[in-house]
Structure formats: C-alpha cells, structure tokens
Length: 253
Image 1 (tube, helix red, strand yellow):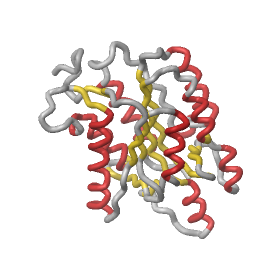
Image 2: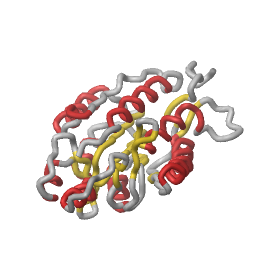
Image 3: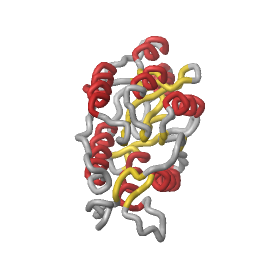
C-alpha cells in the first residue's frame, strides 16, 4: 500500500515553505518531517505534542499529509505507514480518524492553520487488490468522499487544501511528485502570484487558485483525466510564503 512519491512530496514542500517563509515571519521553526516508516500513528502524535509546546497563538501552523486516506461512514481517515489491510474494520481502527485528527489539532493553539491533504482512498486500493487487479503506481486514488473532507474542515476549523474531490483519482508520477504537490511547489515559486500584483508574498487564496487551474490542466494533458482539487475555507486567507527571490524582510527582492 506504500506510495512511490509521498516522501519526495513531504521533503520538497517542507523545504520550500521553510526557505520561502524567511522574509515573511520573524522566526521559522525547523519542520518536523516524518517519512515512510517514521510516519506511524504514534510518531505523528508525538510530533503534535512537541509542536504544541513551542507554538504561540499568533503563529502559523502548516500540516501536510501525503499517503493513503479513506472515507468511512462519512468521516475522513488517514492511513499511517504501519497499518495493514486485513479488512475495513481493522484498517479503520489503525487509522488516524477525523476525530483523532481534530483532537490533535486542538493541541495547536493558533488561529492561522493550513491543512494540505495529498491523499488517496485505501478502500479503492483494497477493492482492486481483492479482485486481483494490478494497481497502477501513478494512481494515488481518490480522497474518498467530499463530505468527509467537509466534515474534517468543520471539525478542525482550519483552511484545508485537498488533492481531489469526491471520487476522482489523485495522480502521482509527475516530475517525481504527486501532481497536486507539484502544483503547490510551482505556485510557491511565484507562479501563483496574480497578474499585476507587486506584492512579494503568496496568499492561501492565490495558491489555491493556481493549484485549482494547474492540476486539471496537467492531468488532462498527460493522462486524459481531470483531477479537481478541493479548497475549503474557514476564516480569512493569509500570506503563507514569499515568492522565490523575495526573501528579504517584508518579502522584498
């Protein structure tokens, strides 16, 4: 069930955000990056505990999760590395459920948070494996159920960007990344900045607009399939990074 490029996505996005937030924020903490076998439920919870001890109410918090996900009874579940598929019930029990994720996020006492989900549906994978199908490595699958992401947003009260809607597939294998994450990385370079903007920063709205346009364009051109990302907003947009090359205080060149 392990994906090919999720680790690349996590490393690249954490590095890009850390580098390009330098001119925007007074202090940028070293990101906690859990890759592959380190992305267990216990280590994810430990990471939240560590972050909760140092984060302040006016800080900005970003959570990026790339891997398998599934919707079960209308709720979103993230499948950690160690989870094995025996049946749906055991997979759900081993997952980080919406309720667990909401409880973890409540430990983060800040009003500015961004959750990014580049996730697929383990339920679809399980069904294909049960039928003896060879599951294509380029497919991350679907986020599961749009209502599950809606409920996750309401439960956490955060700004959420998700790789795909409803039962569409989220694809990987574009320049050694998931397409959704690749578009995020390109947007953060400065491509997400709106035409005519003299501001050196990139806002969440700008980034979401760029990803919404680029992801279906790339997937349609490359695979003949339109992957449509989701944006769910609770609260106002805020700057998330400086454009590449605008790394002086105030996002100046």
